[in-house]
Length: 141
Image: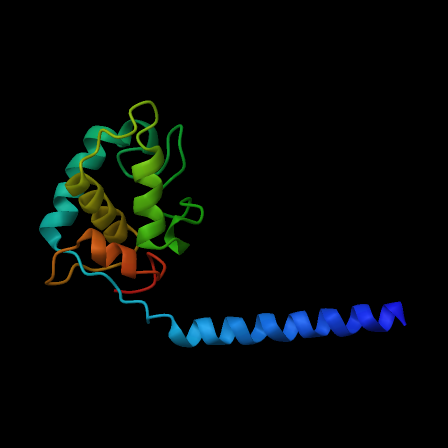
């Protein structure tokens, strides 16, 4: 009797979780791929070389920190722009967190998007656009 009650409760909880997930998926907005300009990526490259290349390498190959592009990049290309921007904002550069301005964060994110397979577009990248883009960095051109 106790086992049957447990099985029923577990099944009901699973059904509720499935329905909740389905409803959340229906109401969740569709991810929009953020656009960035070539100029933003170029500015991001300049900030990267000034603030990040010492550890991540001039070619993003990784020196004493993870590679950020190329075959050794780990899983950066599978991360979304918001995940990348949030991590940079919260933890980079090591020993000097907070030195990057909001524009620097946006531009470095644009640079990393470009280096991981996305192509520049006509609209400039904004923090709001980064927050809406949940696709992988390598997920679009």
